[in-house]
Image (tube, rainbow over all chains, first blue to last red; front, side, top):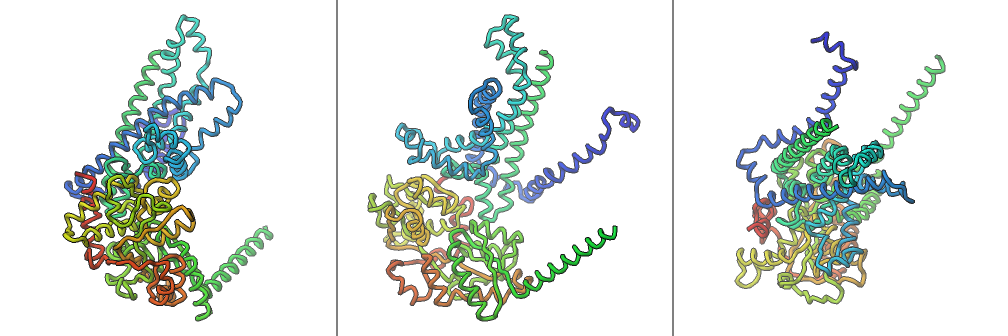
Length: 278
Length: 338
């Protein structure tokens, strides 16, 4: 075995793998395992009471539902944005390109406050939306708006480089072989972008699930209606219920982990499929 | 090579001189950390300056008081988790109780150590309404009227908001035929009128004043005055209900910390300074009700005389109130979950 390892083409396998594992443990696994260790001190009944009470379940629905929806919206519009930024030249393009990153840089509380100011009934947008019956601020819809805002750059920034590498010649070849525009998009462009889109989706989703700062200002925080799961965790901490808080956190972690695992699985499936297709 | 060594020597020398200087400065200067809740920022800025002057005159020592502000429970958790606060000045006794229960940094009877339940200034719960009071809000029962939009923070995340909820409960209880059942029914009606439950008091102030949401905002009196002064002179009115609760934000020295840091004397004096007329005047200037009768009388125009109940009389103390009303599955949860 040792002889085989010594003949790897790239040197430093042992060192880099060792370092990777140690680093991952220190930065990710140790803090996360603390959550599970604290949770494991609970009795099964106490755990169920903490994580399956109606208010908490309602919050899962909102958090995961709105996060999935926000990630989907971001995939569609993020792709459009990335497409426009890569394929077209227009004045102010660099400015738009830089603007995309702003949700990364802005403190989320600032985002939440400005979105609320915008969509409240006396805000710039809210004053036109409320009379026609669309309430955004202080409703679950507001949660969605905030999550779309913070998730956008993830999709744009993962799709953009792949799109840049995608030669227009391939599309021209498709066209010269008789494909119409829709066929080209569906059979040539989208399959190439799919892995990047999935990554963007996963990142935007994961970010949205954990988001607190921006959502809290726009949500209204009504129990059973517009409470997100991170708020439930904070609520439990305010009661000095550390264990209950970590129990809910561990449910969130496991659910997020499973969803991300599924998305990763989809990704490798699409990789294999496109490899066969080429 | 030799220049190298000299340089290193010089650096060592300079460093030790600096450290010596810092050490000397430290001997003449004491630092205290006051961990407080959100709306006391301006209050303690003024109080700290007055105390520093008093302490300098008394002992010749310079005292620097660092302040930390945040949600009351978050602040208590920070102290429990090891933030070295010499004194804590929080929104309700429940959060200071937690410091005893969870970390044993203070004795169980901490609240008996200073006069007036260790609350040197008080406040109460009042209503903030739009100018001219267009919805004609006079008392608690107007908040339960269908169609009135009420703004208040979430009592589960905001310590201050628990006083709001309990004041409403106490009002219902004080009515003829008032009972626990009728009180529960009453607060349910009020919270059905709440469309936004911000996580903290300042958030609710913003929602009501800046966003223009709601007809009435249940608020601490000091916050109501501050909101009018800072955000909306001429836009808002204060309505004082017929009955309210005596909000007592308590203070205490954190024994384990002051003994470790050797700051017990100055920290104790710091809190005792609250009983001076000068400090009581500072409280009144910052819209907190002073305890000293003379100072209160001087500001009688500002602090309307209202019938005040206490948490101990009506609810049997914070531990009980928290457990019955605000813990998971408590009455507040039952309002929302059928």
